[in-house]
Length: 159
Image 1 (cartoon, one colour):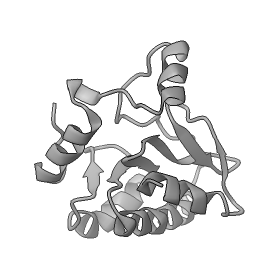
Image 2 (cartoon, one colour):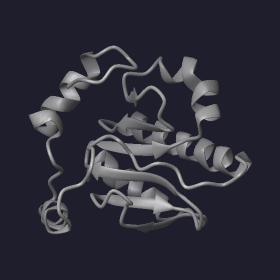
Image 3 (spheres, helix red, strand yellow):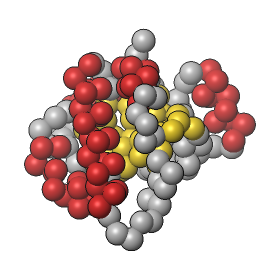
Image 4 (tube, helix red, strand yellow):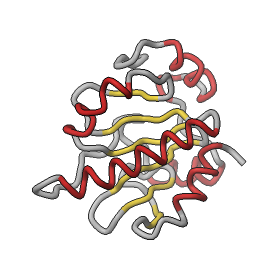
């Protein structure tokens, strides 16, 4: 069982979240009745929707781990999932996200994630999910992307 599968199994037990297809049409999402909180594009990463104030407040701590990827100006962040500690970090941040969204006024659905860009045709996305593969961002295979991502300074994206 991958780290992403362990995280999803735990999230299935959370009473305030339901699973389904993400807005970006690739992978598995967990949402409240009002907004998408987290989604998994692959077995090795999860995109988490925080508010801008929550990201700003947590920025010093988020910069201390190589498992977090931030995109400047985005309310989404990516958690790379390689081990149990990454799963625990993700679950903790999901709790923060639930609280942050509950405190945010007015409620607005967030912009879709930016990790993989616009999804391909729905048929292609369905085939990739069924095959268990995620599209390779920037022409890299997922394992190479994870390895490179750990070497890139925080707040920067490869590409």
